[in-house]
Length: 147
View 1 (tube, rainbow, N blue to C red):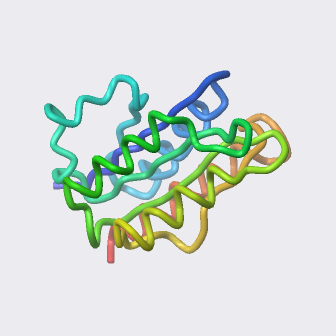
View 2 (view 1 turned 30 degrees about the horizontal axis):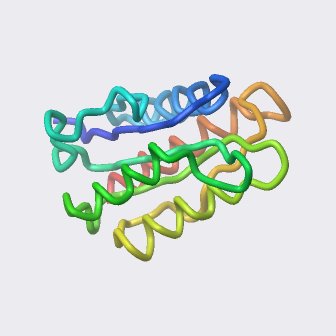
View 3 (view 1 turned 60 degrees about the vertical axis):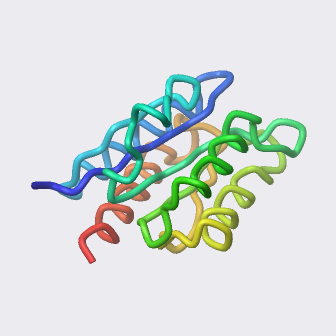
């Protein structure tokens, strides 16, 4: 049975969703299963997050912050217990991108997840090689899931 990754994202303009879908493609290219879901559609009481081998979380940065729905998810993950699971963090940003580092560092230091080497920062999936960068990030996650 192939290992499974869940990519959870928050979005306001659709850019973070596009990036999530490209990361999922990369994970599939790496031979693993991947599912994307908007954080607003995620019911943590119904979806057993422990069934996933990897959890990847993305948010845009607005006014220097992570969207509240992703902050809430990070608190829920702490109580669910995802320590040791493969993790990744990504986001879209206009100027600063603080949300991306905050998600990554929370997953690494608070949730104690087995993070890929770095977070993925993209202004847009459509600019400057964004498609390839997001798919490559997905392949990195798939590779880490194999170990």
